[in-house]
Amino acid sequence: MKTQVCDVLVVGGGPGGYVAAIRAGQLGLKTILVEGQDLGGTCLNRGCIPSKALIYAASQYASMMPSSDLDAMGIKVDTAPTLDFPQMVEWKNGVVSQLNSGVKGLLKRAKVNVITGWASFNDAKNCVVKTADESIAISSEHVILATGSVATELAALPFSDSIISSAEALNMDAVPDSIAIVGGGYIGLEMGTALTKLGCKVTIVEGQEKLLALYDEELTKPVHNWLVGHGVAIKLNSSVVGAETTDAGTELRYVNDAGKEDSLLVDKVLVTVGRRPNTRGWGIENMCLDMNGPYVNVDKMCRTAVKNVWAIGDLIGEPMLAHKASAQGEMVAEIIAGKRRSFDPVAIPAVCFTEPEIVACGLSPSEAETLGYDVIVSRCSMQSIGKAHAMGAAKTGGFVRITARKDTHEILGIHAVGKYISELSGEFVLALEMGARLEDLAHTIHMHPTLGEATFEAAIAALGAGIHC
Image (cartoon, rainbow, N blue to C red):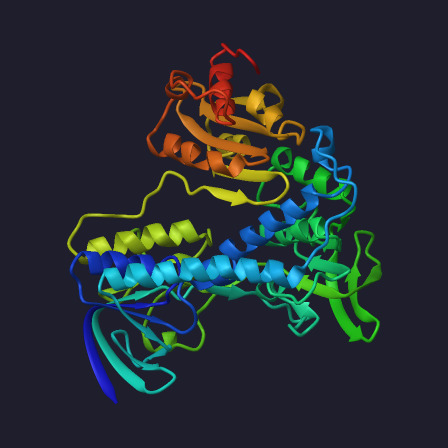
């Protein structure tokens, strides 16, 4: 068996792991990255990127339908476009492949030794990696665990050809005529939106009393309205009992909001009830780590209970977001190299790529009040923004909402909903991270015409000087 020794061993090549490996390599540390599948992890290969590519393609298809919004612009489409779904999937896979090659190039430039295989730890610092051709023993001074997460499987709905996770949904051979989506969180609604645009009859079965339960109703109402307006059936307060697949399709059984068992027959069932940390099958039980429930317990520097063993990303808890993992990966590499860092962000932004999109950054009004803040809450409707009208984004019920302290005007949160609104998230999180006051946004000249003017307008409205809102 071959043996390799390194300064830093990174296990997992997702957005946390590969960023950690690149930064460690840049800092002159001898680094090995072990990944069992494709570089980029779930986000690049089976999540963020392919889903957004499919959502974009579905939106392009829907926009070419007769009597779509193009009609009002004077662009006449007399017949419906044809859909070659396998080619759409091939195009989506091409986007993923291009980015995957980019990650490989970045790792090579940073002189990271990438080993494709599955690691199994004997103890905290030593593992054996099984590749396609051989087994390699690796010993490292530092270990960064970045194994990510996997889709949660329900006992009542074990995965099969007809009961699938989001990974399989992104690689279907054809658009099903009908699908039931179990779980009304962001993954389910993003997929449901795309499939609806592609002509699939979608039913969402959610156990709680509202969709997107982590967001307040003001944000989710426009999304709910779009879904209902486009024929999506929504079953709230409904719990799944089981399913049976026959030649006729898959019958999903559930207890409805009236407490009675009901069922629906669909072609596919998509289960999107969340994700769990990937802690199985690589020897975590041999590493003497402290756990926090299902997650690895770490401090604000992502240090585990074992010296020089670090954990980042989905493995250590919510929010399970790629940009959080990347930030932690970069930080850990710099700490190992001797720099003073800690993970203490003011806010971690979250985006739902639904129709319309939702951005959440910082505290909502109710969260701020629960913490004892006396707040100012100000909104600017996209109806007030010229660029929104010019882009067909004004009629979705969208807005930007700012929550600030009444005494100091410090901005505590910025939330928004609307078409293309995700592109404003950078300004939102920067404002919070820099400790901006309402005056900072109000006195910053925002380019006209842009959607970003809504942030400016919400800020000046909070100061009692609103112009357009």
